[in-house]
Image 1 (cartoon, helix red, strand yellow):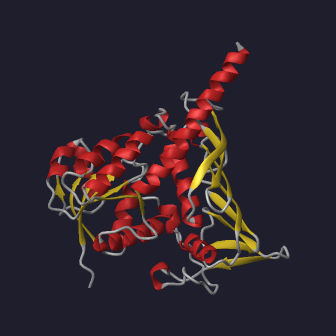
Image 2 (cartoon, helix red, strand yellow):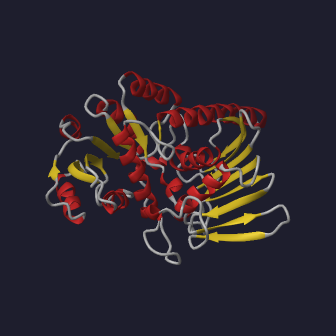
Image 3 (cartoon, one colour):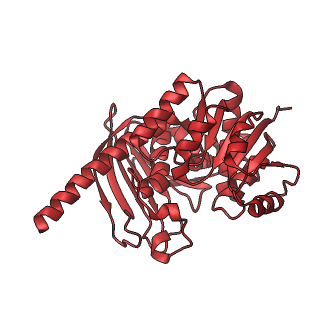
Amino acid sequence: MNQKINLSILGGGINSAIGRAHISALQMDGLFRLSRACFSRDPRMNQLSAEGYHLEDLELLYTQSELLTANSSDAVLLLTPTPQHYDQIQTSASYFTNIISEKSLVTSFDQSKHLYQISELNKRNIFTTLNYSGYPMVREIAQRIQENEIGKLYFIEIDMPQETFARHYNIQDWRKHDYEIPCISLDLGVHVFHLLKFLSSEKFSFSSGAYRKIKNTYNVVDNVSCELISLSENILAQLSFSKIHLGERNGLRFKVIGELGSFSWKQEIPDHFLKSNPHGEKTIVDRGSKLIHAGEDRYQRFKAGHPTGFVESLANLYRDLYDAIKASQSNSFTSGVEEAVEFATIFDKSQTIWREMDWTIKSHKN
């Protein structure tokens, strides 16, 4: 029997956007024991969250300081808004060896460098929960790419269109502001970049891009497109993400093109992907097909024809995090500060270039 990891949780109250998904995923495989929590600074919401998640036996703490200094847990999980992560991770590093945080870990390049130093000098494992790579068929595609099924990679295209700003959802305040790296990159771009890394295992540099305030509802960047080039294999990557695409709830999709074929996948229909061969023939691969990796028992939570989903992919990631914490090192499915540094390097540089271009355009107009 697996020994459970004792976990403390900060944030993620029942009124949050992501709390219920994380709590459900954590309980799915029974690998974590939720020992302490401060779901909210509001005592009433803190209690309602414990009751709503059916965690009445959980030790509830009422301040961030109480939770982060009560360090008898094996790990801490931060489910707070992105702008709070950097400071909370720094504080947590004084008390916890293992820190798991919702994305993004940082809002600037300098913050990413500092967290990397904390991780290296203090021997801290800092992970982030980028769970789209937890979908079984995404892992299947990554394994097939690694086994050279479509040969040398030429091109990777990843899109993440959403309609959030176009339809005026109940948007959290922190998402209405830009930081050193625009919030849309911290919110959506980090997922897109993580998938690029997961599928290719390459290092990339920024080539060109465009940041736009099209809808301009909150005077923040709401549409991004950029090109990256891999440093060793000359793979071209086109990334785009938006919050103004009406009709797109979460249209995350990608296509990977190689010399011998291609793979394409969509998040809204996650249990199959298309494979094309050099003759232009297309094959649908689903969970009932002969699979290399996604056929493992751990991914078959129910039989083919009954789709897996977002929470299951998050549960897959938590199983990977469990293995990483037990082994005291990351594994091929976990991501943390090294990827955060690379992400921040690229998107900080692209933001700087965009600001210079934007200033030049405005100067010419005047």
